[in-house]
Image (tube, rainbow over all chains, first blue to last red; front, top):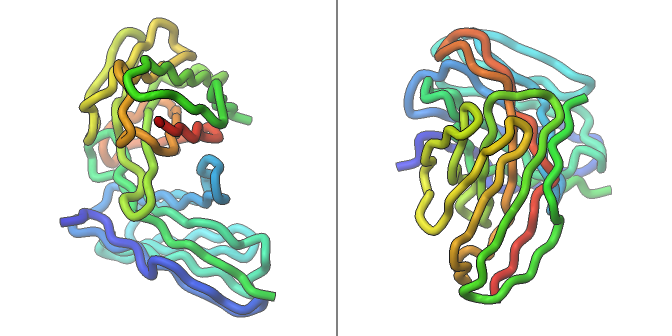
Length: 110
Length: 118
């Protein structure tokens, strides 16, 4: 079974709407990373969360890690076409490598 | 800014050919990683390296080997390319982790190499 589940797999939102992407772990995380990928390109680092209950924001993107450190959410406020892409979460389970979710494809319609 | 470069953006090879994918980072990072990314399967770790001449198998090492002769360069080798190795290959690098729960440093990714094996 997958250690890290992302939902939804894909999402189409109208420009200006808010949206949330979730990343759920089967076990406690040491840390959680969020990345964005434009189609056919490499991953761009967005944010890293380490502490239970931690929340970070950058421009219109907010990421949270729950108190139990098993679930993270990425929230985009007032989405824009520039937000379109694939969002991936990566988990540090203490193996010194990251385990990635399968990604959420976001399309923003005008 | 950290820069991770990969030798080719697109590559077309024939079955049975030996293929070299090169990755170079300019931030003196200790750790380097090779992943492949496939639709529906996400990002999967092939090999990683903690230091020069050191390598560790990831989740899917079969059919691949790696080489790290210099700190800044990590090569992925497909000894005899097969059609099921058609994929997007991503290289990444990071500073050394202190340990689980300790100081962490994110992985920085290259632009990717899209490999087609015919």
